[in-house]
Image (tube, rainbow, N blue to C red):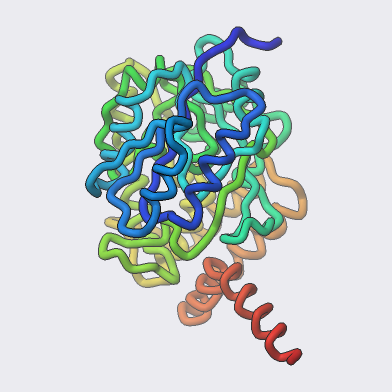
Length: 351
């Protein structure tokens, strides 16, 4: 049943994405259901981003500020917006034309967040043949609520695949997250309302070497991510979940929340193989880590082929000596870049 019209704000956050920002803005301007406002925040870019943003005139609301970082940008965007639904769109991602129309149709009273799949593409928008999160078709508010009640967590996409209800954001913003708002907002959202899932791609998630998630605090690009840092950040986000649950009188399950997220079981295993772990994680046995991951894969909502791929990767990583494991991780996290270089070499070798 189609909901009555709700206002939608799209906040595009940009820092030195001159190559991509126009594509993000154009994707919002081409919606079958127009956005009620498009706010583009440039966080002190040093490339040509500002000229590109300014060229859109009054089609958007530009905000040019000195570099303050993603934490400040998200708070600024929310403070400037007015929509009943708020989307934070990273400037290197894009929405499909019918995205806002389908989002509005999915909204219902009591919703804290709507989430949807994203097609994963490379820097040139070439499909990489996978979706993030690749939600099962039967995912709905009830199944997600049960998952959260049992595990204290649930499957959610990257920033651009989430739509937050203003009613939820007004209760928790401004935030001071460990790194970015999406991690905390997605983590605590089930405490404040329903999580509605659209199990189909409504946009593009672009993978490239300059993704913010690949850059460390010193500004260097990590060939292999800093897993210990990511684990530590996730633990802080779960601390914030516990704090919000206490305030609301919500009883969370007595489990290690990271052990209920396959990606972080992988991170813990890769941190072990990299010789860098967070806090007391090093006390766990390798067997315990591996069996925890195997249990999640067997019980998880995966297709048979996906289940096999996860099992092969996890067990191979656990059995591999650390030097080989490092090579495996380098290939996994740079396979698109390596594939592109190999294809370029093939083309050159023909002449």
